[in-house]
Figure 1: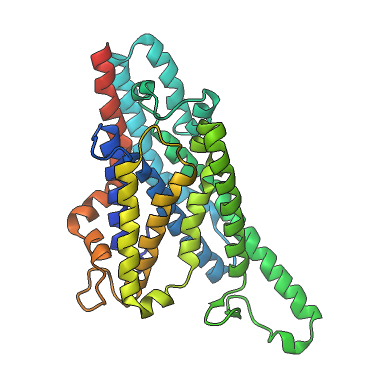
Figure 2: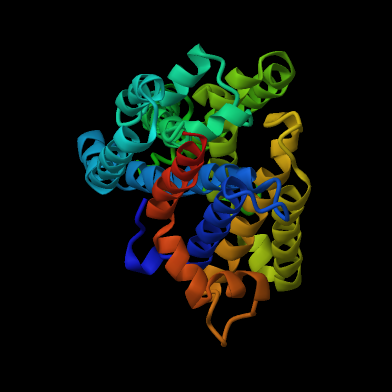
Length: 361
């Protein structure tokens, strides 16, 4: 999601750069980062954070969601580049791949733009870490498929949760004694527990996100040891990573604003957790499962610490209580890579897999 100018977070752009750098390093065989594939999990948390923040803001402001405009905007932004990369890859494959490989992977080219290739990979129990994965030039579209399938269900879940709470509040206001509720209009804060005021619907949204995330994580952890392709590719079993970002977007940053030293510590801890995942995970690890908690939690910590700093000033601001980790994420080189992260992700795998296919042929 592209944020408005006033909501732009350069530290998030830098996080995107770290995510895509890990994935590219892994796919190009950089042995120093054997767990770079965990960069996809960083992307999932960022997406959950941004999309939840955007959708909840729209629900709070208007009481509804313009889903047609939402999906049209995503299609205009994502599909043209994705289709061009697929066409270019098919053209190169006609020269490089054997006829058998062309017949097999052209099916992947059909599923990729429909954002269903993850289901095709599950159908064939395709191992992301197997040696023959290097000859599949479309396998990296699995994460985009998971993300878009998440975007199909997530707006409906948030809108339903908000509607249910507002409906319940409305009924209570009609039946309860007057002193219980003060005829609070929609869009005004409701009193909850001390120090936090949530607008009507937000409490139910938090509960819904938490419940979905918990069930998704339990099933993902279980299936990682039972049927790893399902745990890896099936979008409902990756929903907990998006949910973690969604919860992070709704948690107040006041505590970190009042304790900048704590914010710095959380940023450093989050960056360390992602770094440990990149440096120590391997293809033989039972992933995602419990191991995915490490990059997911690290990303959540960085997002929350950055949110606290962004309210005081941008992470670059010399007048704010400086958080050097988030300030580093706002550096120009990372901003440039972050802005191009989607295109880099689309192009890097065909550029990595095609030469391998050429050498084999």
